[in-house]
Structures are given as structure tokens and as C-alpha cells.
Length: 625
Image (cartoon, rainbow, N blue to C red; front, side, top):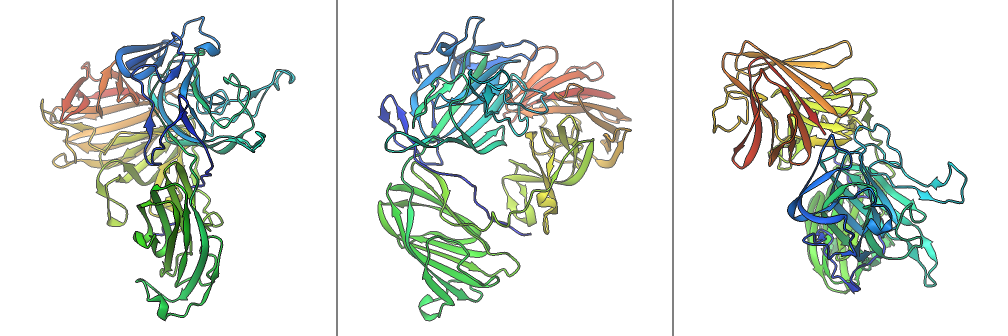
């Protein structure tokens, strides 16, 4: 397996975070400062449509309605028909420049809101459930600028639609991440660089990257541009709720490399050599770190020495990539990364000043192409690269599979969050590998992965279909990855099993006599999966709902020799709603339709909740997300 190392393309520059006129202490880049939501004191002159609550919920059937429960931690906007205009928007007392923002939000049905960085540049929030081709008005888009002097039809300009629809259904919590770079001004106050959305992710899907914004978007709080400004939450268009609002500010000076020199040694060095006794192939001064000073492709060692100029003392984290070999990083004559094999990282406390710097890259895997990458983040400093990486020049184009028709693809599928044997037989505590996965894509942009080893749906997603680059590029590892907004259901388990009142759901197929029997395709190439378990023959049909809002699942059970239950869903909290609807962990809806005249129950086992129902011959339910 070939491991390629590349570093994120993140631009870094100055910024401020100010609260009530005082500069806040900068949090380390790996920690977020959460906006307090115990009351409304973090906001300027909040209007009556805003309130603090303990919980929020919205109906799938009622437009622009959010209900709340007493408590703290959730910020809720409940407008009325007269709530329109800037006075009903909410601005923080905090002001920011460059910032990373994360928050959760919930949209009511048909609702409209927005998050304005510096009160000027809007990331649109909208109920876009079921939209196939997003426009600038849709969820996660960068809203357009507006000029009344332009002709009709051209007043709006420079809007940027989201790359795909990564939205959840109304009433479900959604997660937004924004890395924002403030506009730049010279000493005279003239703007010399536009504001930029460095990165915008919605529900884990990248929607925008390195996107410049030439000025304030429509309905902003300010028409001018400045180095700092408050965060604004739009409250005059529709019902919306927010929680877990957190920010990390940047603006401290970046460390700089000075007086760099390099030495290149020919040979295979899997251990550090005694440099004083070796004649280098080449040496001299350089201005940047890279693998470029070396003309050898297979076995060599590059040693860099110099100084790291540190202005801001504090904890710094370094990420090192050394393709095809190993590496060592020493700063201030101490090992920060003692031994990197292909990649490594380390954290060190650094004082201000010019500090000794040493970096070693030893390449000894002859088939790997040389590449060196080093990135650093620190107190008030967004991660940036200290190297001129060659990875971009040789980057592999992604191998994407689109589902313009009903499409099936078999592959390995890695599910994060469960301990299991990982790739190449090594333990990977962050992923479980489904080895007999069938991913089923549809032109309605609703897709799912089915585990043939358990007869279970392990994940569903909306948007584009699959990235098969890790499966088919070079040697490949056999896996593919969803490329849309994914909802996963944890480690796969049997869908059907016998069940006593307090019995835990079985974690494997032991004693079930489970046997997969493949699948049949209908005239539209949609599969119906078949298997045997506990003596019963099962047909499992999953179909996209006509309105594109989710999936309908129908199980037919024949010749069962023992009473069976189905576990429809599991999670931390499962709440019943109206008309057979349940919400699971605020992330997914399940709509129960029928199961031989019986009703599902929510049970708690080992601190988790499960929705289970007895099944004799037929089970029908839908997953909405």
C-alpha cells in the first residue's frame, strides 16, 4: 500500500478576537472557545424574538415553527409576522478577524436564516431538504452581494452556490464549520486583500474552499469593510436554533525559518548516521524546506539546519510527512518528533527568540516518490506549511463514481468510531472495516451501504455518490468512501434476532446460522437482498422515497422457527413524535409504518436506547434524514 503525504492548503494571516473592547487570551489552535449560552449577555441588544432554552424541536409538517423547552445551552429564534429588519438580527459583543467557527443549528420547515462573519459575509442557512441542485439561496451557499443600481435580473451578483446539497431534514441538528480570513488593509486604511472563506464544511462535506468575497453580502449589518466585526445570526427571516457556538481566533505572528542550509547524503540510512564522518553529495544555503535540493530519487538523506524565529511564546504543534522513509525534527536542540515513519507529529513549548532548528529526511523505500512536508500551528496561529511540498504537482485526480442511474458497487467500507482490525492487519481504533459492503446509489442523490455479513444498512447519505480513489488508484486498498452528507449507524449488527426483555442485542452472528444469499435486481436495477437467519428466509428491500427525503425499507420474513425482533435503530436518545415518527440523537428520523400489527418500543440497555419491534412476516419503515 502506498501512503501519500500532503498538507492542507490553508492560508494564514493576521486577525483579532475582541470581547467588550478587551483582547481575549488566544486559545491553542487545537482548542475552541465556546460562546456562553446561559443567557443573552454575549449579544448586543437582543430583541424579543431571541431566547435561551434547554432544548429545541421542529416539526416536519409545520412551516417556520420551532418549540423550545426551559433550560440553557440552546439559542432559539422564534419570529412573528412583524419580525423583519436589522433590529431582529443578533450580533455578538465579541468582534473577530481571522477565525475558525463551529456551531450546530436546526432549521424549521421552510425556514431561512444565515451566519454573517464580521456581520458582513453570509453563509446561508436554509431548509433545503430534497434540493438536488443548490443555488445561492440554499443551505451552505455563500449569499450574493446586492446593488440596486444594477438592471433588474442583475442586482444580485457574486453569489456562490454550495457544491452539493449536504443538508439534513428540518428539525434535525446540522453542523457548520467555517475557516474565515478577514480582509486586509494597508497603513492608510485602503483594502489590499479581499475577505476569504478559506474552508466551509456542512455536515462533514466540503462546500467551499479559498473563496474570495469582494464585499459585504446582501442584508449585512454593515456596508463597509473592517479588520474586525461581530458575528451576526440572522433572525428576521425564519425560525432557527443554535448551540455549541465556538470560535478560535488567529492573528499572532508566524514562526519563520532563517539561515537555512542543507546537506544531502547518498545511501540507505534507516538509522541516523554520524554526519561529521560522511562526505555530503551536495550542500549549501536554501530559502525553503523541500525534497527539491536532492537529485537522487531512491536512497538518500537530507539534513536541514538553521534557526526558527519565534515571536509568540507558547505550545506549538508540528506535523511532519516524509514519504518513503523516516524523519526527525529537533528544535532548540531537543527532539520534537524523535522518529517519524512516513509521518509523525509532536508538540513543544517554545520561548520567543531565534531557536536552533534541525530536520532530517531519510528516504529508503525505493519505489516511493520523494516528498517532504512540515506544518505548524501554535497560540493564535492557524496551521500553515513550512515546506514547499511537491505533492500538489503530482496529486492524483480523484476517481469518482456518479450515480446518474441506479448503481451498485462492492468494496470495503471503513466506518469510523468502532474498534477493529484495521487496514493491513493493524489495529485501528477509529474505524471498522465492512469487508462485504454493497453501496447502492440513485439518481435521486439518496444512497446507502448494505453489509452482506449482517443483513444491515450501515450508512445512508445524500448528495454525490462514491470516491473510489483508495480502491483503484495505484495498488489500492479495496475501499471506497461516500462523498455526500453521511449518517452512519455504528458497528454493523444483525437486523433480526430473538430477544428477551433485558437481553443485549447480539454483537455478531454467533448461533444465528446467518447465511447471505446475494441479491436480485428489479427492472430498474434496484437490489432486494436475501439471507437466512435463525432458520428464517428474509428478503430485504430498500427503496428511495418518491420525494427524495429518505429510504423506505421492507423486510419479508418466511418460515421463522423462533420469535424474532427487529432492531430498527439505536442511539443515545430516541424520542417518539407524531404519527409513528421517531427522532434519533437529533440526527435522523425513523417513520414506522407496520409490523404484523405490532408497535415498536424504546428500550434502554447499557445506557443506550434501542427501537425494537417483533416481526413475524412483514416489517416496513422509512429512514428520513
